[in-house]
Image (cartoon, rainbow, N blue to C red; front, side, top):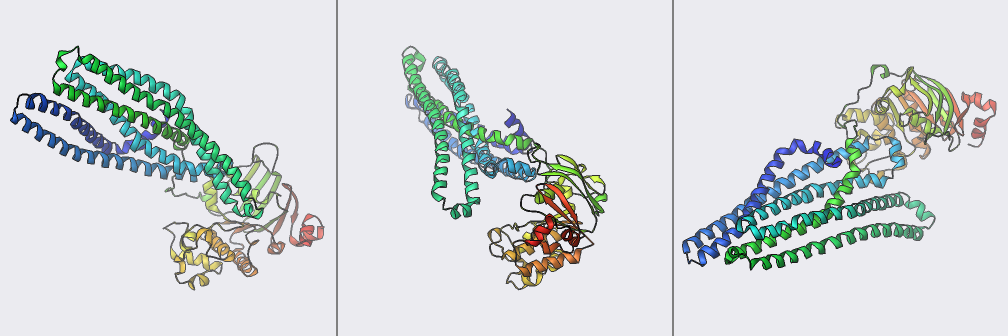
Length: 570
């Protein structure tokens, strides 16, 4: 019920289309129910009494019923399918948007494959739920009651025999539901686990090949696949018990009806017997289909249940424009007051008692060995995580007062490795924002010395970058990522070892760009190469999550402490 109530929100705007489609469905079912009665009149009134006029009328009625079935079946299929596809498209976009706006630690605690499963398999299961299960399941239930009505019209006593089967079938479905729900949920969980494993393996394919571990990983994935197989077999076993029971009920009903036929004179008419047999066949066809669709229903519900928490979450619409408060339009100071941070909220701190004061327009360097907490510190400044203890203030205001997206409109970030999408150079700089003009893009690329190189390409800014930027060099990708960050003129710029994986020529271009914006922006740079922060206003040295030294480049060398060791071994 929770799933259906969540989906109802998205169904309501399209109720008109659904109503017309359902009406076409009811007319189609009604026309199909009339046909056995037409045949009954042909046999009992036409052939028996040799009344050619009745035979002709019944033939015309039968032809009209076929034409009506064709017309309304087309309307039913088109309208209901269009309704379902429209809803699924909206849901897919909404789920994707909600996932996109989730916190960073949600992606760290839940494997990527699980998110992919929700956008693909679970959404597809809802498409099955809409267009294949609920519509056909609902039409079959209506059809069953329609058949029972027609049977009562033909013969009340024989119809009572068929009616007795309905509660028996209901009990069977109820019992089946108890045993099957667990099996279907197990299949979904194992499918998500399989997708996560594939995602993880492909992400680390280079590592696997480096250690020549293909056979070991294949064995590992074989075990994952076997668990998925076992879950699937359990699902098949559950359904395999259900289907024969329905077939058995069909044969019991046939025997019961023909046994009762000898006791009622009203069924001696050949047309009545023929029509009743046709209705019996039509009666059990939807029962069998309900059994089959119930299998799909359980699978769809299991997938849909995973989406309910996402659908009920509130998140920023991707169409919303994020407005930066006036007090953040320019950054005068950044302060860290006794900041502690732990990823699991325990006392196993990644950062411990960090205090800094940075003035607007300063160039700040942060150094330390791997694992010192440098990147974590920048993530806190970006609002990707919240301090476990302590405060971070911008312009003397705690950043907890702002949404993380607002902070990221103020603070730009350049990663150690450039993250490029499979699109053009223009799309990767603008990040698909149509409001960004070519003039702004050119201004950003010109600042990093990339514009002239782009213009030498045959397609200029419309040049594809390839999968993960494979058609560009490492230096070109990093310059493009740097231009992307400079595009929005954010007052604070964070550099996370942005020059560690590039050639000296590209590094010089980035250094020149930093020099050109120095004073206008606050630049905080994690330095892999000590020489890149030689001109920094202040350098902070981290070790094992603690701030142990700070000062100018020359003063830190003179102290001959940790920074001196890093400098000496550069």
